[in-house]
Length: 578
Ligand code: FES
Image 1: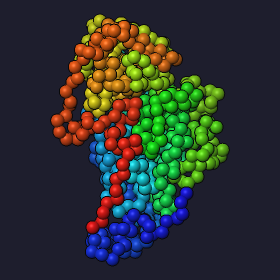
Image 2 (image 1 turned 180 degrees about the vertical axis):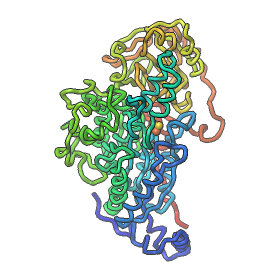
Image 3 (image 1 turned 45 degrees about the vertical axis):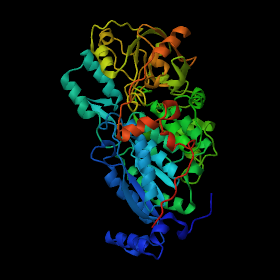
Image 4 (image 1 turned 60 degrees about the horizontal axis):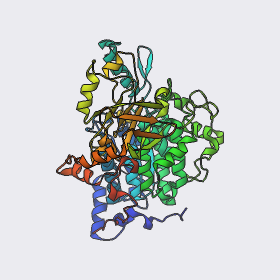
């Protein structure tokens, strides 16, 4: 750690201290807002990056929670400056929030760069907000602390516990199968999201906030606190207090996000039964910090890290509220024992593992010991083969084990609309062995790699009583989804990946224990199909989408913009103040 900073060394002092006309303007305009010089003189200015909006139910409490953060900043001798950022609601933003994750990252980085701030509290939680905020703040490089929104309370309908996302998918299949009434469906609609906060299954939001904590970017235990729990207010104020000290200590993200911290984040992610989306975001976040992380690293750690969090969708009963009462993420870290690297530190300046021996586990059915895991390996498996030379992922713990080894004929759809016709036709000729394939749904093809990968079960199979089958796509799926869904096929079909060459009727072989996915088509035939393949036209002729299509990387690289990665190189200068 570097020496304690002086006020003159702070970024904000460049705006607020000089005796010149520009700084006169900065000071007089601060006074215009009602502040007196003693409010800011000699104090770090702390940005509170708030992703609240009227279109973001997961962050509905952030308008009020920002006040608690500011209170903590003031208590610790800092000066808060709240800056709103893109709220990226998973429910409302179309075609997919993934199209805009990098926009939030760019916005965060440039908000921090262009304003007179010395440190930041990042307020996020809904899926893409965690990686978006963290990626931007890491690239900016000033001290920051992440404040997770916290999961919402358990859903409830007619005495049954409901998990957001997961039970929506499950009961939609039942409705299509005609086993629940319209009235029951409406009851589920009203009961599945009962409070503010992010999804309370172990979906992408809970996974990503757990990853942020395991990477050392939150206060200890912060990610498990339910949004509606008074502990969340206290934690918000504590974030405000701590960030001020982090600025004086000059505790920058590069000191926290080391390869040890990234390995810890991967280990914890695997043990949570993490969302498949986590792979993409983890790679992108690590690469922003200059830590190379490959799909093979994730698979390696996954093979030796069992799933310990018995939370839906990997588990069958519990939700994030139960996880908190059972001891939360710190309890899960305790169960992991020496699988965590003790050299990694957190925003506290202390090791991640500090104090874990004091942590209590209140329910070891919810947070299992290594000797009694939910699933013997980690949550995710990485597949390679002639259909996905750069990789694909599957969540073995959330699919029927009979599909872990499977061979069947492909049924290929070139678009979601085409796939919808197949799945909605109760008489479509397919069998339980059929492998449903959806292509042109990747980063370029979707565009934005939408969550279409959990292709709904075809009506023709639902009426036979079937609830799972092998599905393959270059899309993502929601972290709350489940089933034998192979995702993130790279390179994607839209840019000419081998998935573009697969035809209906070709045999496909999936072997999860061997980590392989292949089309059983002769090499000469594949070569002939490749020669005949015609590239589709780009989706966008202007605007953000045009920039997105020109620079988005493939899923195995984390879907960052090529010009924002550390490999691209280059430095962005501090703004001139003149
Ligand atoms: Fe926001 Fe699920 S919709 S976390």
